[in-house]
Length: 203
Image (cartoon, rainbow, N blue to C red; front, top):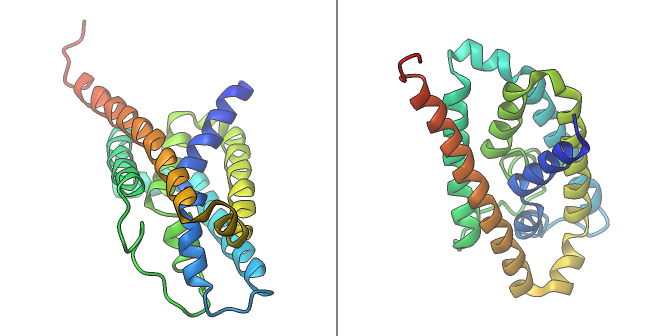
């Protein structure tokens, strides 16, 4: 697989995971945690999310087969979910992307799930593999690269908040939301095109 496609997949996953948008969630979730312990918690949650995403990447097709779902339905559902997440990135809600984060030390929820390994990220990794299962290793590389960047951003969440400020973080999140909106629409159109073509009479 060309390196450009792996890079594009990594960028897509990075937009879906949205580490900059998750910075406020991380700060709120770790508010009552000692500053020295916060980086270890973030790394732990990122590793957990990475393992979950890998599980869906390798077992996603089997999971879809058990549920009797097609690749077309996954593409349409993934596009809708991405579009809804993108809208919440562009038009911020007071409660954030996934609702209020608890003040106590988090474990899996809400950081690993659903902030990092959320429905859109899970659907995206399954969709990538279902479209091209022969290049599973390339998707693993793309996911690993996206998770490394995500971990670095979230570990440095406190510094980013101080450097960029609230307005800067909002601007970055909205920019990522705009890009993700276009990707979501394209994914939805591809799914609809595939669905419609299934009804077309053979030529």
